[in-house]
Length: 178
Image (tube, one colour):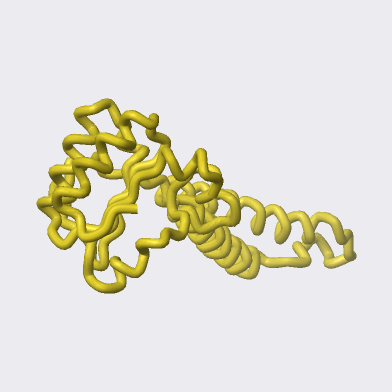
């Protein structure tokens, strides 16, 4: 990270959720967008513990669209194969219905699985370059606190004034401020 980018990033490790909540509330009141706030915890936090909106997931939508796309592709390949090879079979299809059904089922499952995995990787910021572009998910010098049972608060994209105020507020209750 460049020195200019670090100036606008505030990181702090906390022992208690209440301390994180107070700093997050103060940050949101000072005009920081919720999308700029990232909280890392060693255990899942209950809904409503922090004043941040719940992120909406589109995994289900992508899974269903992958299933439909995979099923249509598999059906097209199986049915197209039967039509593409004009073998003399006395009016009978060279591929019967049940095998086409099996291929369609397998294509549906494959499409669903592939799209689900890709979307989960995308939403988790685990695809190469995604976390770096958005500023979320980057490795931090304070990540060791999460392994030790503390909460890590990261707020990025701040102006110098906002970053200074947030650092001052964090120093009162944080274990370490970066």
